[in-house]
Length: 192
Image (cartoon, rainbow, N blue to C red; front, side, top):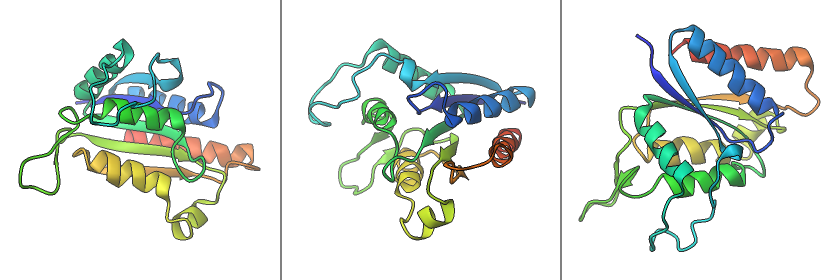
């Protein structure tokens, strides 16, 4: 029995290596019998700024309401994004700020320090490209753009396990090396 997968492509450029990773993952997932839907954030119409923080009400645009429905539909989420300045691109961060809202993704309870994750029962994959060597990003920079997504965002909302494919350094990589990362993305999709 296949899983319901939502793939969220967070790179703003349509011709990026992230798009190649997303395409290969999607193809392999479909071939393995999974139902897959895709969201390309660069094609969505929404304001990425949470203007009043979480203090005020900011109505969600139609594309964000649809994205929330897709997240609820999915059993497995896949985020494909590059590491820029140690973190996720602004487009992806804005999407997360606007979509993963209190009452939808998590809920605080009186007297408890930590919230309840409302997206339990889902798992995730992170397909991450970077120009920094992954070992350096992990041990010297402490991989903030991965911890942010894995622990302080997805696991905070109840999503686990979260697997990570690190692709880098992308800059100066050969076609053979890039193909190896694409094959790893396919393998990740088949192992669901």
